[in-house]
Length: 180
Image (cartoon, rainbow, N blue to C red; front, side, top):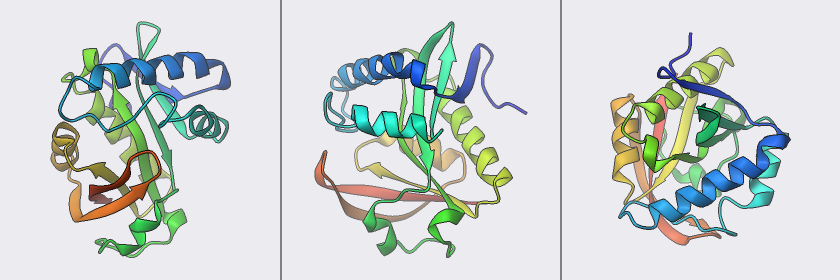
């Protein structure tokens, strides 16, 4: 059963989608620079072409479309920042037993329509079907709109932790977990 709002579809990205995915992230980066909760992504930084291509080739990049255009994207896999090992998670799970969400963004013109929540419900269902134990993610400190989505879906904030990502340096992140 799909959780997507009417008019939206969700699928794994293919190599042919790369130019549209790059354009989506570039436009989102431009639009979010004007808002106080931007994720500190930068063109030619994160998400990089290599990162996106690797995710596409591994069937880990999901895209949401409306009227033939990409309006949201996320990477879904089990890759974690080294700092995840420091978090007092609610359950103990091996890396392969956890789904982690990365580079999740919704076009500013499609925010507030339930798309982000619907996509996360799809991740929850996918992880459950795959026999995972939990979904985990990190959220940069000032991204309050995304935090609200995660809390409303039943995610638990497990820690606040400074993590290092080469794209943003050391930043405070909120660590969330959804136990399946």
